[in-house]
Length: 79
Image (cartoon, rainbow, N blue to C red; front, side, top):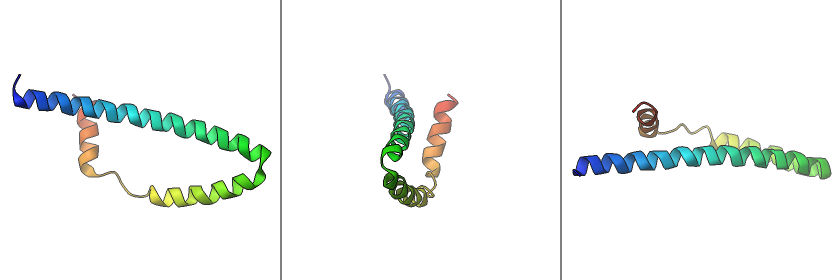
């Protein structure tokens, strides 16, 4: 196998792992959100502290995805 083919294979493998991890993160976030709602039922103070943490998290999420990563994701979805 040529070096270029091996590198492309490895790159595709890594991008596949990235996609899997993104899906796992989304699923974990949904589960955490559901748990937070349940906690708020039993501990109303938890909802207030959660709101403050979410506002801080959203300000950090304003950082855009690097263009190179977007390009790699597009290449992966359009082989």
